[in-house]
Length: 72
Image 1 (cartoon, rainbow, N blue to C red):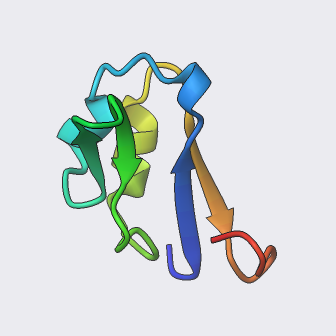
Image 2 (cartoon, helix red, strand yellow; image 1 turned 60 degrees about the horizontal axis):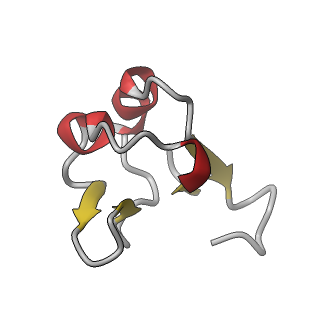
């Protein structure tokens, strides 16, 4: 997925950590915030599809940076 970024819809997230398990190079658990965060190297990571499939609450959003250049 070149030219993409992703984000977590926090109110929808159950903190099950399925995304972290599926794609630890992309998602991490932030102990301070108490929520899943997207690592800065998210753009273009091909494993995002695995995380999307494993998320039980559909709270991962993928953004096409070419279609929406203002969203990072």
